Length: 491
Image (cartoon, rainbow, N blue to C red; front, side):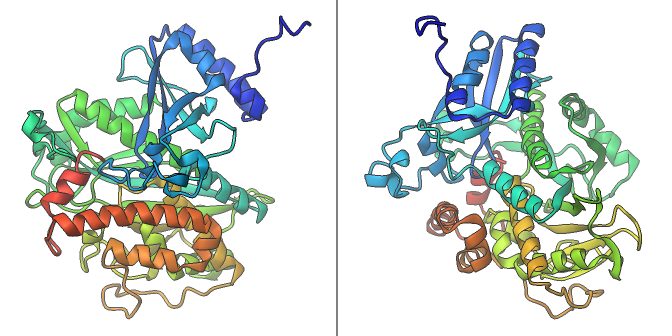
């Protein structure tokens, strides 16, 4: 074939970015776009906060852009939760000491073809979840999805796969005032006004569930239409508070499910005159805090069985005990990822079914890590109750893997169970985001595992958020208007 007839090599081909399986999935996605007569396709990536960003293209251009990638502005990787740039991007190195990050240049979104979905709530619209690369083909080191992928590879080298089940609480409100006057368009904008869908305080009663069922129905249908492994839809104790739980998935799939679930829930709700919020503790009277309980275990790759089931102690294997001990040992540093907002730390209160110290017990909802499963039960696993629903799932899960791997490598012991969780003497969880970030910066284990450059990057963004809070708001243990404006409609 002459050079004149040879097709140009695409960005994906030039840099070898897809596996054979992904290339086959790309062909299937292109066929689905044509079959469903789609008009638009969204190319999205999860940013440092776990918020989806991206571009929407005409469906006819989508197959070519799958191969060529879609450009985005590198400043998106420098934003705090108010979407304010936290780095001096127009200085040499852009504040990152990286030529690729200065001057607000481009990076390239490349879709993972296996993530393609037809969105059931957005007419004639498809969706891809993307990975991030610089124009020279180098992976963007701030891609949190890639960071989890790296952690899973390290775990695989150790002979294990990570299995995670999601149990996510959130609030669902009727949207009364979206705050769309110019006066309300501050930066960040004023939080919308909402009203309740039920009064709460009747945990898991059928009457309270029925009051909110009609509002939950389009969300439930949308989630299942996307193929997410939804297991249950529940009404929680607090007013207008719900919980969705999902069957276990392997690590990257579970994190992708959390990203898409949050985005789908918020988008479907808004199209129905509702507002879904994954903010931990909204600033409305009488509301309860929401948590994200992460159920997790390891699978032995050689045997294909649970690595946590055993009889070393309390129904756990030695591997499970060591992993548990790692979670407790590194709880302070991991809190920067499991509880990444200022608001989330106001959930850590004694006698509230939320943890306030790094302890464990069997089937006790007051501890940080709860062992579930009877001795010999192959489904035995750990439930970490520390997380908030706004956490970036890639970073939350990565922190669990690296903490657990350290516990296994050092053969750490978790100590005795805490059967009276709010009276047991144990290290208290961080009292605020600043304390958690200091613990993260001081952690040798996380500094080595995540890389010092990423720890510095992440901590810098969160410290910028914290500095704005300290300059603009005071509220002690109460939720402030600053938090409401910052988080209520973002997450």
